[in-house]
Image 1: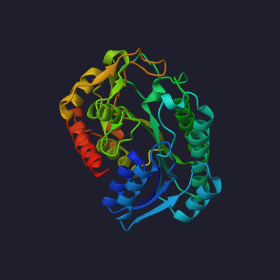
Image 2: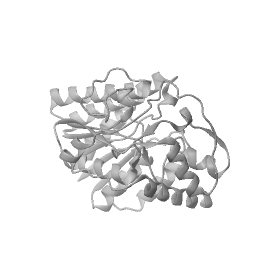
Image 3: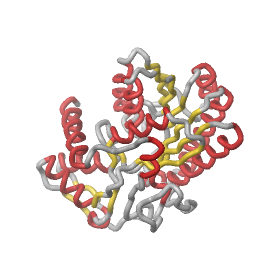
Image 4: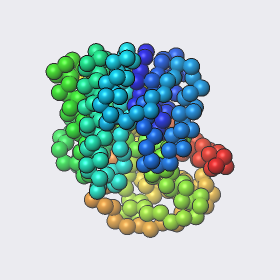
Length: 318
């Protein structure tokens, strides 16, 4: 395949691009290297990809309509994997215009460019946050939406709906993958596994909402990548698919696990959860199993051990 991966220098994007390259695909990576977190982390990820001869890097922003149109017109892509986005539920709360601009307008720019270039297949990174506080467990793709808890999931819902319109009108195959609590090596420093690990390692205090009586469906990066690659290889028309592990973990137990790995006690405050945070996330992955042959392999204890090994190595290197 010849694949465009947006957000290719980020956490998930760099792993997806690497997996595609390792199986012999050609990858055009797009990233704007913004400063939401230290761009040097993304530059290091891009350097890993640059070692592959079938990788090309394009430094541009998905909001740049002209640059996106030119790239898609010239690329001859078999699939577009759109991972670039402004992420983080809490960070989005006072930044709705920015999130709308990047996550909605940027996605429309790509859909429009794909339509004009004749690219038939579009894989979109959505989020478990779209479910909000649904009371049905586990979360199913046919759960009613429309009541997101923050701008970030609201923009992802909007992009999913826009994808449906492009499928209906122009025949673009659009698969939206709802990711559940992804973690692993190269994880972003604003994500909970990194915050907890870094805080315990440096004996700093962090907030554990509701004293850890919350549950998250932690999903290891390699399992997420397997689902993304399968989706890129299997045009399905229009589908929305959960990618999680399907086994929620109590947050207090998660912190206990990190304490054991690091060998130090956690220093925590235990405030109530803010209104942007659901108490539980839990993926029903039966649809992913059926459509994508998706079978997550990594238990959280094994995945966090690998994360800890990476964290120690990159901490020593820096």
